[in-house]
Length: 240
Image 1 (cartoon, rainbow, N blue to C red):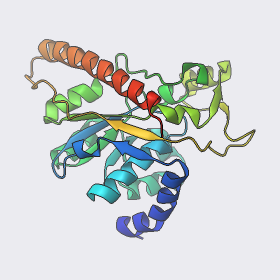
Image 2 (image 1 turned 45 degrees about the vertical axis):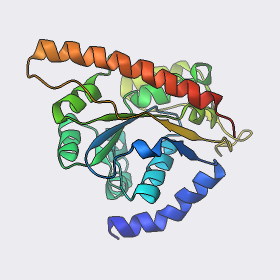
Image 3 (image 1 turned 90 degrees about the horizontal axis):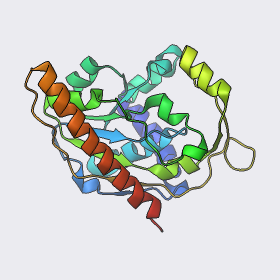
Image 4 (image 1 turned 60 degrees about the vertical axis):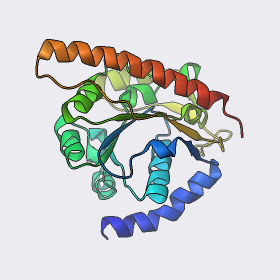
């Protein structure tokens, strides 16, 4: 089965998930019809909310975003091959740069698993401090950044704080967690999910001067965090 066949096979399931969550996207017009872009998302425990956004982009704009995913996926038998068929690539600066230079849309969650494993007492937060790699990637490739906030994805599960979770991830980078969805089950709650997309945000130009580029990346990074918090606030207040 090639990529298109696989997508057409799975698409009805993803559309059903969008219906279950009454998923909507505000600002879809900000996704360019062609050319490169870096979509930067918050990371929930469920994770599949990112796939709902990708599904909306694919069905509405006929563009398939290429997500950067954790290397853990490639350590699980067959899973690495499956996500690769969907266009995913193991997250690395070089792989991401190649995709952007080929004018692809690339999706990245800077907070990674550390952000995804937050307990529910820390819902609607991002953990992007010091995560400036995606900014430098955008600078080097001249790619606009589009922020995509879906904080309500944190409500799909109740995630409990656990010292074991923190220790396992810190020591082995293994995501062990304690959570529940509908009642005591792993079924995600039927929460309405809305992605709020920012306007394209253009990074400073890459100069090749390490000190200057680091400083420019830090300043732009701080502005992105402020804008992401604004989008999160809008999404939390969304009703419908």
